Image (tube, rainbow, N blue to C red; front, top):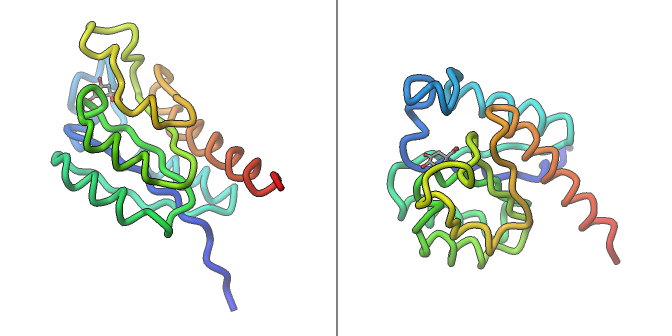
Length: 154
Ligand code: DQA
């Protein structure tokens, strides 16, 4: 009998479906599919599964977080521009019981002032930003470590 592996929900916000074509000088030339594949490979190394949801609609991401409650072990979220103003997503993430890692390809803190606010940060355990596509692998590594720590704590 096979035992189900813990699932990490990887959430991708608006316009990330255009990665590869969109501002490659900032976001690189890899596609979202390629980033998800790299995250999935790293997850497998840690005995985790990845479920990926990309949407250009705030409510879809809120619903995905609701669907993860009580079912997924952790969430990695690149909310894209929603990071900077989507309080409904922030509220939804706050209801999630597992670790949450905020992820960005670029470093929003070093860009335009409107990107300096993150409504995800107050409800995230940590942040991976500015490391390009490598961030997808690092975020999964971070989640695996956070889950190990949780399992080890009494
Ligand atoms: C982003 C940074 C956001 O400011 C921007 O709106 C995005 C992508 C990143 O991955 O660097 O769409 O989340």
